[in-house]
Length: 308
Image (cartoon, rainbow, N blue to C red; front, side, top):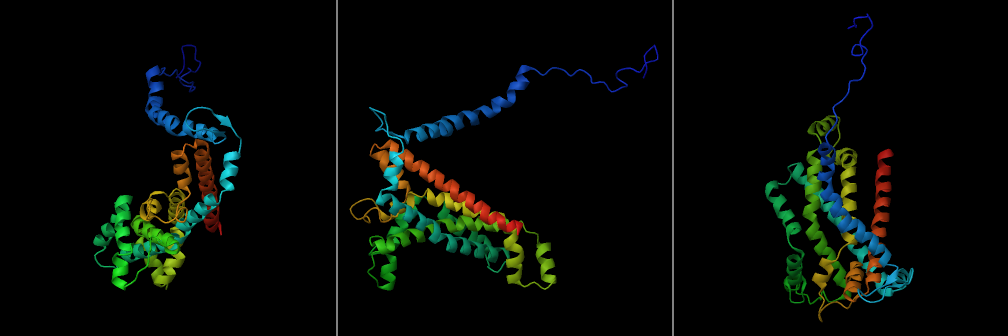
């Protein structure tokens, strides 16, 4: 298209046309939708985290004088035998149930996926029921099973104090953790297995790969991101563990002598209850740093297998 003088018009040359101005409401609308998240994030996470970090450098009872003591709260925790006993307990609750829980959940998922287990639709809800059970109810069930006059001692004719003996108390908690978490990881692994195409496995079978070879060289490598997710989630939950050991081992006169079975989260709760908010904040940040460091190591180690 040309003008009356024969020169090409701006439209023909592809000159940009003026765009209609967006109304102020249209510009603000996306931020209004995001505002509830940012407000709640600032109010319930970001600001309390900054305050907690600052509070870990002070001695404060919730009222009165706020006294700056630097890193004394951290040094007090690191020099406490109780703190290191609770760290050891937490590592026990993390590492001991990890292999049997993940391994058994994966094997059960393989059985249901390959239809080796009949009535798979019945197994799924039965395995998942402990996960949706309240920790208090689960602890009551296991206290009945493992008490000195409980089911286990009655069946096998024993008189073992599973919950009162320091040698067996932590193992009792580990058994409870495996029982409660097995169904959760079973569902995760089963969902991952169903996402693997049958055509891939059938092609491997045609090429002569047996069941063990298919699991080792195909299913496990394909599920590596799922294993990473499961292990990281289990690590976070284990380090933050509080309810199960305290509910199962009790807090009254019949409890195991503390800190035999107490997890590291007891440092936060007990210091808050005792009015030592600086120590509680320091313990919370130590837990946060431990979770972050262990998660980074797990990501690096498990992802390094993808490059090899």
